[in-house]
Image (cartoon, rainbow, N blue to C red; front, side, top):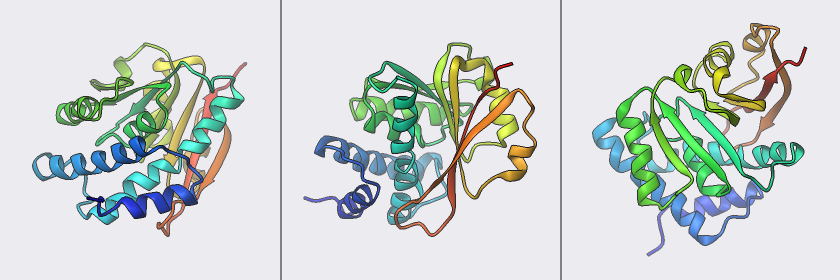
Length: 220
């Protein structure tokens, strides 16, 4: 039986020009089902309506996949192996979506809330995603190097970069998913952090501004 949201998801993927195979599409739908199931008990997300989850969570995160792949290509990392840390991952957005769409990327999702990290571990097992792991910790305590450190609606750019700089590889980049252009937050960044690209995103079915702020440690 077809999933109620499958046609909407496929339409969104088409608009985003993302080519996923049937297994990946099914995993995204199964992931949505797991969020709905767990949210009833653990309050993972404030969004409860499945159709709204599709646009506000899934397509919102999927809009970042092509830009991420382009950045990796420009850095000569397109063929992997790449390590990505998703900070304050919550229900696993965008970390789990990246893990499903980009199997060559090792995705670690860190959250200070134990039940959210446990949910991510459960998704990794249920959806058979060996490249996904949930970590229950404060990001400041992580020191292993990651090529990309991402966040979505997590904290101010100043807090995000200062808390996670210890986990950023020497040539690594920060990928912050934001709503409208955060000019005030960018202005508040220390001189050690360089914003090298602000990329507007168009999310299918979502009439709201979205962008990615790409940052790196400024080379002296």
